Length: 198
Image (cartoon, rainbow, N blue to C red; front, side, top):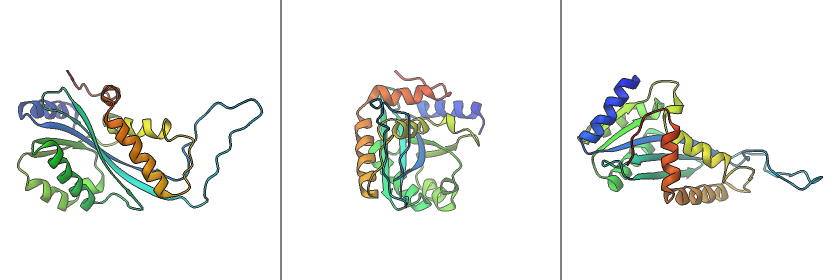
């Protein structure tokens, strides 16, 4: 999909009074995301971590309301699991319960997104439209900025002892982010897409 088609997709979402929903996935590892930090002179910060890395996967959606007034963050996080087509279908179903049936979903070309069973599930919902971002253009998806913020700010320089600790903390940070409307809007503004919000 080229950018002109994406612009048409945004206009269609407004015309259809549908939520414009950007979706992306990521993994959180028990090994810390190391960033520069401050420490007293002569006291080098030390991060202790386990030698075996474990992963929690997450799917998130940044959804812009039909009237372009509200931005919502919805997510699903699961330890020890990779994103697959069944999880994507369940997430779309949950989005429908929270946002209503009218949605234009925009996401990348992950194999789970292109799976036949995902397209069949979407086809059964007449008010759900799916569009793809251009290949090799992750910067266009505002959810990428959510992941970057979490990994380089609240979760940086922290090594959880267990995957359960990581899942709990990541969930807590995502829940806190849901109530920060200005920050959610900043992720949309960071994307090169022209997304008008009121």
